[in-house]
Image 1: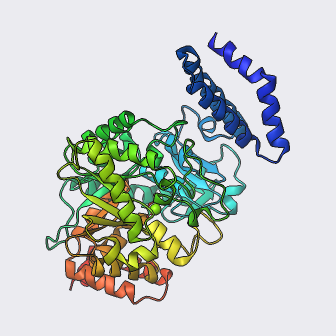
Image 2 (image 1 turned 120 degrees about the vertical axis):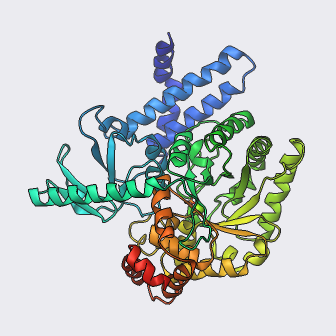
Image 3 (image 1 turned 45 degrees about the vertical axis):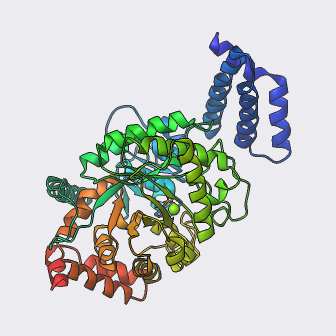
Length: 505
Ligand code: PEP
Ligand code: MG
């Protein structure tokens, strides 16, 4: 009966006519179908009759299945066989929603033909333990389904049908990396610190409850960034306060008393939310993103802050606002927080409040922007994109958006130097997950790092190999470089305990 109702909906001439009219007017088919069905679902949801209200779920289901059909048989969840050896997926582009569905047991890696190193799909896949090689080049574009692939995301290798020598060397490399990871994992539960005991806690960036479990097992000392827009990104309707509180509490419980920093909705750019449509903009990354969009939908932010305040009464849960450019925006956000907290019985004791530093203006004016805050967390992905004016997901320019560029490192150094006394500086951008770069960040004065769960142990291991003086020396040399490539070369040379010791001297 349910499927018959779905069929009837598909055959409804009024609905089909409306979608066809939208397509004729220039809308893409998925957009036309998605918008019309979302509107119909919304109407049903608003009905008094509980039976009709419940039909909204059918509409959502039909909406989703047709959208999946429009995406074609190449849709990733259909391309991955249920058994056999794990596969390397080749996609044109990896979006965050698809990345969140990848099964790390089945998908050994992803090669994306387009996109930069810090696109959100790439970050989500990596946080799930799936290596991604973005902008993988012509070899990946021509590969036939079922071909054997030699794949190394770290060193950017994608070899179709590798010969015996290549296979052997890749297997050896893989074994050496596994041994390195195992050594690091053996000490993963020690707190992050330099060789001379200077503490640098290493936390994890998390998007799902499953990530949280992986992060704790990998030695994460908490969660420095919970990307809520991805946690709830699959929903057609805004999650209620209760649903959000339950999800935050679940993640906080997985972290078992360790701190969890919830980032408020960071919608826009390459992260759409079905229930919070962003306007079509010529330059979405420079448009109504993150906190900016919340000013148009403060009730959505208030619900989230209410959920955070509720959970923060029982767990060490903190809150962080993204995409801040000015002190005035911070003041607005804090007013909303107080509004939400008042309804939940006041700001919970122990709840720390901070903002992300992702916009050069916020970095340069951190003294004003961070006034009265407990912490700032530097988002090097966006800070690099905005400093270099190079969109992080755009293949043509993504190499420019490299957070290792000395101009970006200089901004990190300034934040550490200028931040108001008592305000802590963390980094939760992808740069912190590169062990050698993590040493530079510690040397620049960053007090805490938050990285993809799979990198926690490796970052801790590298920090353990260098003294604080050595880290400062490496940071000074990185700042003196002329280009991101030069910094990369410096960091590659700094690899390994011997080099780290030399830097330490
Ligand atoms: C960043 O910009 O560095 C960051 C951590 O946030 P996101 O990658 O989610 O934009
Ligand atoms: Mg960001």
